[in-house]
Image 1 (cartoon, rainbow, N blue to C red):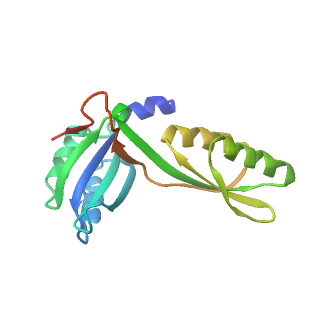
Image 2 (image 1 turned 180 degrees about the vertical axis):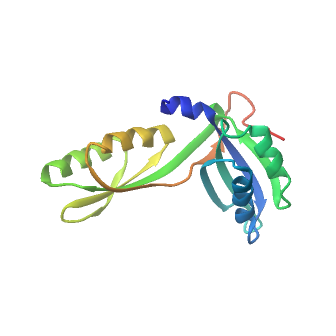
Length: 177
């Protein structure tokens, strides 16, 4: 299946939770017990201090209906609010780090590729480079595909994070469940 076809099945949930020990474990455990697949997960405290955290969960709805996922999340005591961020009304991003084995010829090619994508070289060794790129998931997918032509030592991506666009085409945050 093409990445675009897979992307249509992915839904982004923004879950506001009380910032208490064990909440993330309970959310992850719920997904595990129910057989729901998490495509991506990111969590951090909100700007409201230490009281709340926001968990951004990307869910593959082919594995489980979105309504069922939301219903199960809503049962958790520490969940305050669940919103779906519609892809067209959300700004989404990820971070990618990659270490590439690169001799003199490949090194300049990799550096040029990184520059074209707006990334940066963050570490340099005698025969390796570590590069960093932040951006939309589709941009990182394209960059990662191009890196496959080189000797990749390691690639790591963060979970997706998302916020509503400032001027959405429709209501950006829709309460589901």
